[in-house]
Image 1 (cartoon, one colour):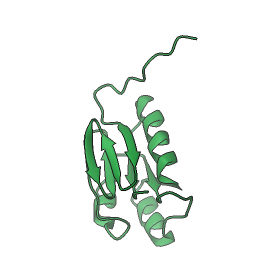
Image 2 (cartoon, rainbow, N blue to C red):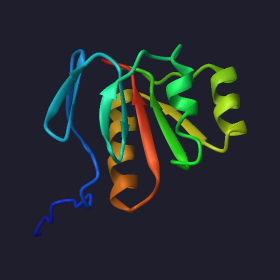
Image 3 (cartoon, rainbow, N blue to C red):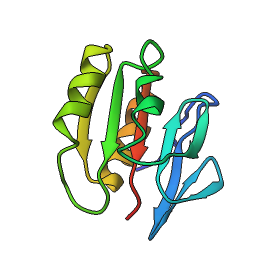
Image 4 (cartoon, one colour):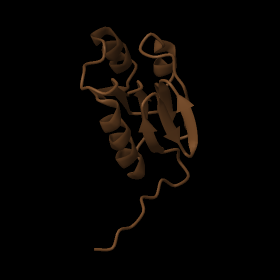
Amino acid sequence: MKLTPTQFGGAAAVDGYGPGFFRINGKVIHGAVLVTAEGGAPWAGLDDRASLLALAGRVDVLFIGMGADVAHAPADLVAALRNAGVAVESMASPTAARTYNVTLSEGRRVACALLPL
């Protein structure tokens, strides 16, 4: 079977991750990261709600990676994002990164906020 590389149309994808870091379009970012089609940036974590709420109107879905294990994002954060028009899905960070990449490759308006492993 011939494999075809995924195309992101110039949008920023999650290239890799490991203990304490993420690689976004070749750039390594240590700690938590917020990734949009425009790029990746350090993120202060679940207490940094302003950065996530600023995505309203820019993205339709936000994947929140809760670290190495599956966990729920705080209910009040999820409610605030949904009230702002952003659908939220919580999962482990590796799964969130992969889901973000697949959804991004489909041309959808997505972002992911990833806590480190």
